[in-house]
Every structure is written in structure tokens, then in C-alpha cells.
Image 1: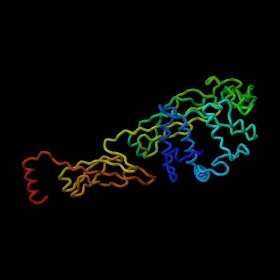
Image 2: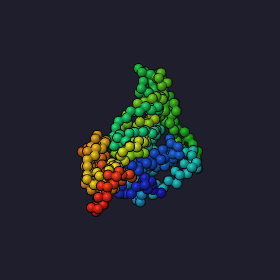
Image 3: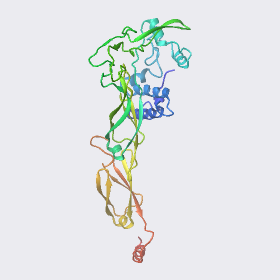
Image 4: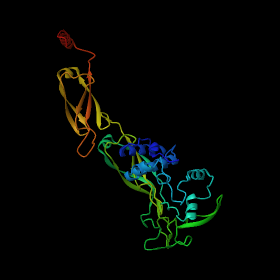
Length: 362
């Protein structure tokens, strides 16, 4: 059964890149395996879907050959095993994951049988998820924040080689420099030769002649790193920021990613709604009747707002281009909701004036 990447991300086929990105961020936070209640399978599915739909070329190919498939087995489907283009091996893969064929790898089997071999998987470090509290103004205008995080990083002394500075590396004597060990395994199909990563050289094919004293030859070690987080303008509370390659490092492979969930503090005056900033403004009855000028504090500084004569309770005034930045030279607006304050007690003089106004039909 072909995967529907749009269904996995929960977006329509006509979704734009921003909608796809937002959907992935939401799922990445929900299913990330490092968080409580995470689901590694669904996280991988969402990551796979995003990697295809976020790339215009891959998405076009997927839209053409993807879910519906074709005579070659669908998108990225397979003539790779030679002569099996019309056969769906997904059932075998599912059984392998459930333990039915856990002693061998179908990729190795068909690679050995038909000569193609499988594409080597690049090792990848674990992803990391953290939470970060930011100011309301930082969420509106964007910001750079420096954070300290303890994680597995490439050794700064040997730069990941595991060798002592000035020393070289030599060919691993276990795998003879191939980085992989061949094993013979039995299965329902017969006896097959499979491969696994060499534990001695971690798949690199090389071992240090003299080990690095800092990481003891591992090439990586736990350390506290300072990372600069660039917060884009206009982010919402709970939104995820992804820093590629800032996760856990692994020797002989690529580092995982760092996912940062943003927690925006509430502002005493403003609320964000799309590209606009909303606020309530209390005005006196006389100000509403006669009009006035009121000074308010905005994120850009003090601003004089003109209250028009005869303004209504609940009426919304718009201050243009003082809201959330939407581009290099464009911004949303400030929307001011008027709340007219009706006095609960009046002096004799004030009451007399109001009675006169009543006679005038006001």
C-alpha cells in the first residue's frame, strides 16, 4: 500500500510550503520520541512525508507517480531488485518489523541475489527537543537567543577522527577497511550473506593509531555547547523551530536535529491574531461624545491615538502598519477595541448636566 504523504501531514494536496511546514512542526512536537508520549514510527512517517512534500521536484514526482502508482510500482517503486517491478514487498517489510523475518534484511538479500546491493544508510544522531520561553516582543519582531545545551558533540580535539593530534589512522583489521562485517544467516529462503556495521571502527574502515586523549578514541563526547537560536518574526505560542544538525552527534555519520518549542509570554496590552495586534482601550463617556487624543504604549514606543467624536462602544479603530512584520517593508495593523466607561456615581452638578443632555435628546 502506497503512503499518502498529504494524509500523514494532515494537509490538502493544494497546501503551500508554509502550511506543509506548519503541519510538520506540529506533528514533530507531538510525536518526537524524546518527549513523553512520543511515537517514533509516526515521527519517522511525518519526517519522510515532509522531506518529499517540502522539495518541489520530489513533490512533483510524487504527485505524478505517488499514491496511485504506475506499472513500475509507483513513486520510487521498484525495478531496483530486477524483474520484481510489479511485486509489492511491503508485506515482507511489515513482517520483518513485527519479528517474522528479524534475522535478515530484505535489502541485503535482494542486493546479493540480483547484484544491485542496497544503498548504504548514513548514520544519524538522535534528535533533541527542548522548550524555550521568549518575550512577546521577540515573537513579533524575531530575535537571536544564546542557549546552553548538554549533548553528544564532535570532539573539538580530534575533530571526530578519534585519533591523537599528530597521529594518523590505520586500516581497521577487523573489517579490512570496508566498515562492514559480512555474516551468513539462514532464513526461509535459504542461506544468505548479510552485512552489519563494524563495531571496531564504527563503520569508518579506519581506527586511530593512537587514540585521542580527550574523547578516548570515540570521536564524540558529552559537552555543554552554546547554540545561537534565530527566532523568526511572527511566531506563535507553541510553534517549533528546527535547527538542522544541532542534535546529538555520532561518529562516522551526521548529527541529528534540535527542535525548540517556543513559549511566548503574555503581553499586558496586546494579543496577536495573524499579522495584527489586538488591544482594548477604555475611554470616558465625555471622550467618546466629544472625541479626544489618547497616548498608548505600543511595541514601537508611545503613540497618540485620535478618538473620533461620537465613537461607539465596541467600535474598532485601526492603526495601520504597526502590527506584526509580514515582509521586509510591510506589517500588519493594530486593532483597538473601544470600551466606553459609564460612571456609576455622579455628583449633583454632573447629574444635572446629564439631565439637561437628556432634555436635548442626547
